[in-house]
Length: 91
Image (cartoon, rainbow, N blue to C red):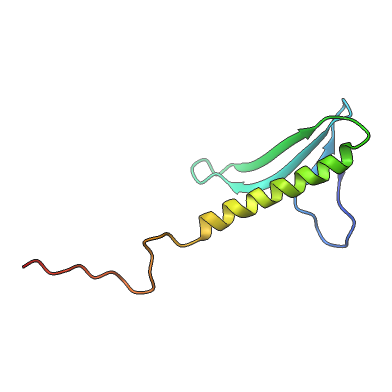
């Protein structure tokens, strides 16, 4: 059973209950550029009285990891500048 957090907005990621009672946290991380397959970050939280709370923490952590990866991927490289580079003429 997938759950969402209350708050009116869409939550990123999902929490599923497994037959064992454990919870699986799953967050979409984009598509693989080579295979074009969907890529997810997953984590399993063992069953217990604090499982739902721990699963929410894991979901938040995985979402922040995806955000960091996207920021690194979309950030300009160290050699990119606002002006095109000009090579020195040979003398």
